[in-house]
Length: 132
Image (tube, rainbow, N blue to C red; front, side):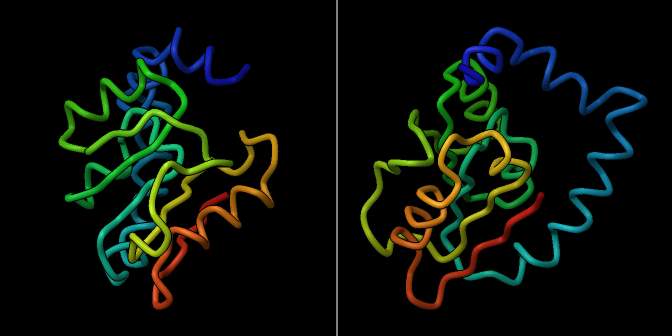
């Protein structure tokens, strides 16, 4: 399973964002996301939060991920974390104003199911920010 790789390599994965190759890409991705997320209703949920590199810029935020080791790093960044899968979000219907999926949809087994779950937990005026 992919999440086991992210568990095993959470520290290395996270450090890449600070590397000479990773930092410019990360900063450009964040610059694209920032105006969309900042203009979105709250509260924020990041699905596939990983180590919290994106959500940490939009606190308060909740993040869900199947990789427990990655979630430990996200929690240190001030993100409320939940262990779980995007295909079955353990959250009440209509509980978020914004759902962020940043580089997540390509890692899930059932993308349509994920999008249905995100729709379920978004408020009627909620916004999905999807980055591929």
